Length: 479
Image 1 (cartoon, one colour):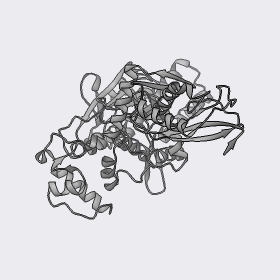
Image 2 (cartoon, rainbow, N blue to C red):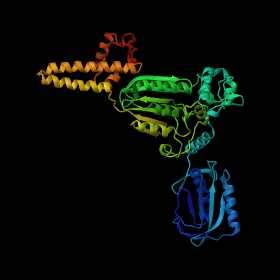
Image 3 (cartoon, one colour):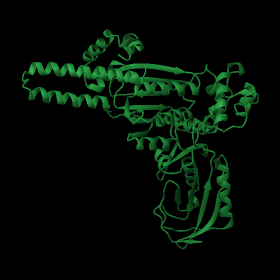
């Protein structure tokens, strides 16, 4: 086969003038294998791409093959053939291999552009660890727990839920047989996957915090949740629901409570953060609520060579770091459909006009929901009433700036107190900073409003120090 194309050296193509450069060629093969796992080496072409050819007899090809076999470890089995390029006889070596790292003459090399760089001990260690880690799955390793450590009630509830979802066709009989059917026992021993799914006493945790501003300088609330994946999912969702803003839309027959971030998107992000995290990493899952955004973080790098957009805008196949855990979550309908998580989050946010961002960072992966200011209908109505009051006062001759300011302040306070009561009817507790953020007022002003409601017996103050919150006095919530 003849080729007249002018060849250019690259990360996967190496050109040598003749087999007199065989040693350098072998080093290039190893460097390319360690970077790309496949490539081509051609003897008989100058580095500038011009073919000069070389004498080739049957022994020449055998010598090349023997030299590659003697000096490359692990062994590779390349395709070596005579090829006419630009009218000249050349030797083409096409090679591939997955058993990285490869060594040439006892040393490892890495391809960088069209050069072969000797690998440092640290680079070699990183490559070996990465290779072994990809072969080992944390969830498949044997756990130290025993059957008595399993939360049987949690397991029963899960099986019932999976039966209802019609994704498994067996009932709970006993703990051992059920875990076997779920693939969570190997050689009579429980796997790590069983530990994080159904054992309360495990090392898994999620850290949650609410911050006063847009950075981590000052926190208002902090909490750590331990337990099973199911417990972390449930309590993380509760925490988020308590600390995001809710608005009310009134219909003809009933009112509708609307969260600033769609709950389906939140649930999907939480499931993804626990399903796709790197369980070898000692880092915790984290949920951070800032004034302008909510971040859900997990210590698990995004699949190498992929971008979130591939899964959002295309039908890319799901790449699972923990397929066994994912399978169990799928049976219980915590995962709706394989590979649809990011797409579902994106579409839910797009439908609800919420900006969402998927961030690949050095230590893991973040889903970031950006918050927007929500004006509640009750607040809007009271604002309009205040404007009408100001106009009427001016038209009726109330020119005193002092009197008008006092009336406005009284109106503002009443407006905030009504809002506080309405918020507490929507959720179990409220913190001072939420009032400050919603009305752009000082902590002192918010405290005065809250104290008035406490004195009136409408709300109750709970907690201590930085964790003070307020709840409705149910006996007088209609007052």
